[in-house]
Amino acid sequence: MKQPLKVLCVCAGLAGLATAASAANIEAPLPDNAYITMGGLDWAWAYPYNSDHSGFDLSYQSAYGWRLATADELLSAPSPSDFIFDGANVPLGGTDPISGATFHVVDALLTGDAACATPYFSSGSWNHCDWGDAPGNLGPEGPWWGQPGAETYAELLVVRVAADIPVPAGLGLLITGLGALVGMKHRRKAS
Image (cartoon, rainbow, N blue to C red; front, side, top):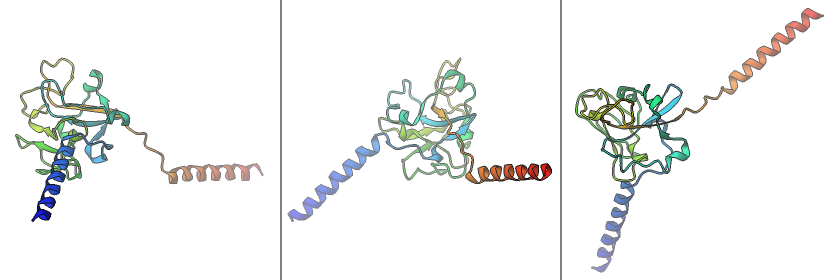
């Protein structure tokens, strides 16, 4: 009788650890399908609306270049619909299996998979992006947090400089080969 009780206690302890871990932010780089790239910046929908963003946490993700957007950057911020794309981390009506991210949906404007990165920036139990509070989505709160001229704010975006896109090795070889052909042509004309 004591053995099953020990097993039950161990299982309950592990479940408690799993619950505590899910409440903390995820200390891992954001997957590519949890953010978008626009205007030379990567944009992540990083936190749901609350009046002071008291659970927002950049301590880990800042090492990967993530930061709050400046007022100038927010003037050209993406719209909520820009975060909808096939293969985004939160499937329509579902939950991201890796981070647990979800969308709170209040209207029908969310029509496909969408990118939400809140669990990577939350020091508490937040794991959602609130689609209804996003700018232009009938939300009562207003534009993205920090946008100039706003009296109230809604969801929070973070940015980082988009990674340089490397020139594929094949393209470099093609350019070198074309240069060699041009050089050979000039040699023949000189002879």
